[in-house]
Image (cartoon, one colour):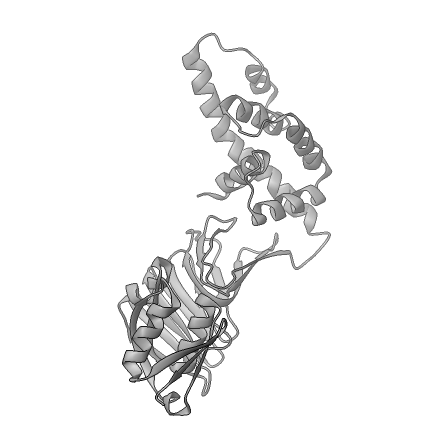
Amino acid sequence: MSREGYICSVIERYLSGNASEMDRELIKMWLESNSEFAEWLREEIITTPAIIDISDKDRIYRNVVGRSLPKDFQEDLNTEPTDTRRHTSGQRHLLSIAAGIAFIMIGYVFSEMIHKSDSGVTFTVTSGVGERPTVLLPDGTEVNLNALSRLSYTFQPTSHCREINLSGEAYFNVEPDADSPFRVHTPNITVECLGTEFNIKAYPTDEQETVVLTDGKVRVDWQSGKEILSPNSMITYRKVNHTIAKTRVHTDSYTDWTRGYIYFNNQSINDVSNDIYRNYGIRLDYDSELASMKFCGTICCNNVFSVMDVLADATEATYTICNDSTILLSRH
């Protein structure tokens, strides 16, 4: 989706009562930043029914574009059509140019905000235990956010860069824009691209951070170097010694979480325990003799007991449900 289309869709969802939390935050920002837009939107809220049909869209967009179009075109908009075909064509034309005019209007709102904050405006999306929301960013980029993750997007009117901060895991399908590099920052690495698809796993409690590229090309920067990734490649940053490893991988395994699976790739039982908590809100305690074990494989995460059955078989151990929030994995 283009930026223009995104802006129009936000306004439509807001007026029809179907706005998401991010939609409402965007509208709030625009309302606070531009009194003319605020006045227009309040009038529309009063007069627009719950479900917007094509005639309502026509009226809404007329109010937006009427301030900016040439006089002769405004007169044409106010002329009743003589037949149905002309009316339908005129509506399509109106809707197509409305997105561009709306974008100009929003661009003006952003320019007004420069006086309020040089650092721009930051919006944050968080996911809870077991939640995997899909987020559409204002530039058209689609993000799948894994459980217990936090994503922050900063609007900087004077910058040509798109800046994201991530704690947790997310799959990015980045809207191409050759003039605006897309950067994702984690505590230890930065991933930069122009338009591509990739997965980043960077939970603060994990022992490593990973970047897996499914399509396109990205550059991964860390404190002491940088690497270019090609498709079906992975960068692993190990926190304990600040080292990087680059390997070839089957990318589906690392994006299986978007389809309801948990994937382990030579991970410690501590990391496995963290994944269990993120998905089910249950702590996994384990014997010290299991602490050095590594785990590989894919498990369907329908319920915690399916996961524990697999772990118990793999470790030749048994598990005990201690209470509503703790499970013990033990060989004794």
